[in-house]
Length: 297
Length: 248
Ligand SMILES: Nc1ncnc2c1ncn2[C@@H]1O[C@H](COP(=O)(O)OP(=O)(O)OP(=O)(O)O)[C@@H](O)[C@H]1O
Ligand SMILES: [Mg+2]
Image 1 (cartoon, rainbow over the protein chains, first blue to last red):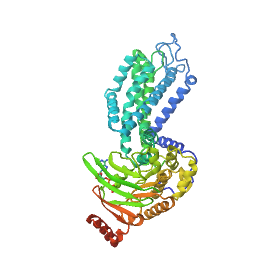
Image 2 (image 1 turned 90 degrees about the vertical axis):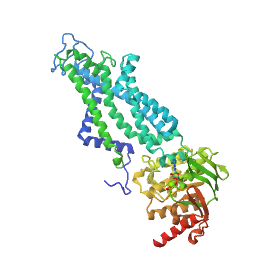
Image 3 (image 1 turned 135 degrees about the vertical axis):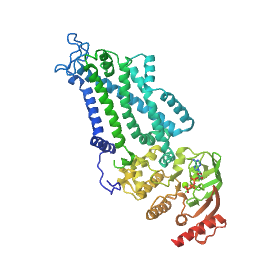
Image 4 (image 1 turned 180 degrees about the vertical axis):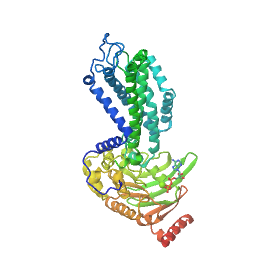
């Protein structure tokens, strides 16, 4: 446990491999974050293996078998067009994962870039970038996404763009706040003395310092992203039929909800489980990356 | 070996004037001390000379070239700095290899591995420290790495901002001896800030006494033991330190 290591032969694997291993082990020891990890693995598994796991074609209609309750032939029943709900859920996980993935890889870099640049340069750069961020922050994200999708036209891609537009400002704020805490640190001065350009300092010295909290924030954000995507789908502004997006499935299932509970229940549970999982995972990650414990990894 | 001269260096932070027309000369290969109470502006002098802070007036010349006219690359190869706190001056997520290779990459040095091993050897650390992280080192070892980082770009002038004040007394002596050895071997010119007149006595050929942003007096190293200062503030400072040493 002590951090005053005597000279000892170090394992040869690169540091980030051991670090990732340690973090995963930490996450698995806590029941909530372990649940999050398991759900995430299930989600990725079902997305990758959707064609294998699905028992039916998610798009094929069978008007002789509409609104059947769950049975061994249709695990989660069938919808109003006779499509297998279980198979649609499996294929829907691909859409969910795509949305989460695309939003995260756009929002993470944009937020980091704006935040670190504003924090490092300060002064007028900071003022301009932060006012811009404030403008985006001042709208509730669902409303802003709604406006964008309404303007661009409803489709899955536009939903992803709209969600990204609303999700980067909190990341930028966070990265800026982190950057401000150490932009006057001696190790930054040392880098400047070595002739490092501002871009190099931001990339090599500042980004690695902001990474843990940004990663935590992005993970927590995924829950919101999923809910917003489902919300847009529900309102008919996200994925369009016949795509098996979970929110859209709930929207169409709503009309038959009283007699056919399975139409809304299973997609609803899927959304709940996945967004809960990301929340728990984010919390677990926050503990795992706690700077006070950092030196142990 | 290059000399350094500071002429009429003045700095204000907003309305607050922090340095008032600082002037002194450091000879080539000399160790020059800067002493004075906390807040007297010692660190500010070094930041200005290193151009970490550029809003100042006056002239700082190294071998006749103003630091303001140097390109960043030229400045990097002329002047480096060692900071007070070895815990804050090394990036917590950079392995020592990164710490030492970055300046070499930026400045386009060749033979990087050989130079890194050489630099670690110069500061008395084994080569396998390259794969360690700062949190795996003691304070003294960190300060050695910080010194290695400064000397790896082969500068002429080293600015030392209280390089030992964050360290244990026994480790302090080690680092001071290392610095003295490096100066003998490589002909560095040092400016060394210190609170501790004993350290200045041990290391410096001459030193300047600063008070509230002014240089009160520039004295020879011998002036400490004999208290040869003429200005009252400098006399008082030296007397207090002699008194302290007698008690301790
Ligand atoms: N960025 C800044 N903004 C405003 N005032 C500053 C700033 N940096 C330093 N000062 C002021 O300048 C004065 C000199 O500071 P400096 O750090 O040079 O003192 P010092 O002699 O190095 O002290 P110490 O021995 O405690 O390190 C102090 O009064 C300090 O409050
Ligand atoms: Mg100081």
